[in-house]
Amino acid sequence: MSKILLINVLNNPNILLNVDEKISYQIITEARHLSLLGQLKACCDRAHIEHDLPLHTQQQLLSGFHSYQKQQQQLLLEHQHLTEQLQGVISSWRYLRGSALQFLNNDMFAGRIKNNIDIYVPQQHVANVEKTLLDNGWRYKNIADYEETFYRRWAQQTTPLIHKQRRTELAIHFQLLPKTLINKLDPTPLLHHHLSPPLCEPATLLSPDAMVLHQAIMLFHQIDYHYGLRDIYSLYLQFVYFSKDATFWHNLIQLHQQVGNDNSLYLAVSLCQRLFNLTVPENVLTYFKQQKSHQLSYWLYQQRFIDAFIYQFPLHRNMGYRDAVKSLRFRGRLKQMPIYSIVPHIIKRLIVNSIPHDDEEVIN
Image (cartoon, rainbow, N blue to C red; front, side, top):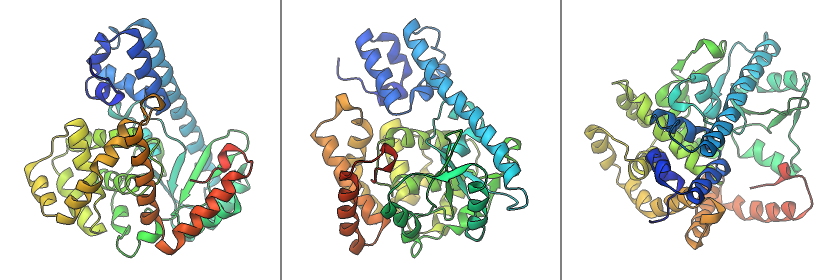
């Protein structure tokens, strides 16, 4: 039997019914390592095999799903606190990424673990929102001074906040796209429409097309692909779920044209086709076939992304994985900041990370 990876099981959870204990253990361990254990349980539930699995496997999957349920409860609690504390400061804000998917409260996205709470706040309100939160039990995450400069100058968010008692981490985004992309990409159309689930009032979520495009751009402009498989799988699930609406692909293409000529959506669709056999309408494929530069970028990087997504787990790491990670990290640097700033940043990062510090102070 060829090596069975977590991505194989996500594509066909029935595999778990026919593997030995050792392979099952490796799959479970990899899923936990990549924060996909809860989603693996949801995947098995959708395949109606959850009760046919060995008891130990069921217990492990359930433990991962419990972590997701605890996060959901914590998100609702934090939302309640934010609603109370920001009353009179700002009328609304938008939840992004994993937080938004949890607020959708849909079985398709059940089990999706998030690293922190991401919210978007218009830049003119950021200072007042930060001050209010700092006065109500939040503090800045302990990071190096240089990283503080990086967040303010190059990133699209403030320095992350952590609540002193609840230990929840909050990221306040004042732009939906990195600052260095502003000259060629316009984030404004991403905010034209929104969803308003009762669970998150008075806050809102991005519209389905904006949610997908935003997550695709952020995924393919980042540096660290530790959770790459989780994120590309999340995009795949969104394509499948949101495309049930007949207008989804039309709206997505229209939004893509309004935001700018970026290849992230092409990469997302192409890799979801390659990795998960995503079904894409012919008119959408025709639109993408016109993007010659995007096809070239995909040709250059497709194997790098595939290696990074498949070979993340330490037991599976090989030369292909290490080369892919290095290549994509440098690509991310080119996307995130001007060339003249990359070398000084890398040198300062190496110096800062060589000094003893807490884990949360590591600079990527």
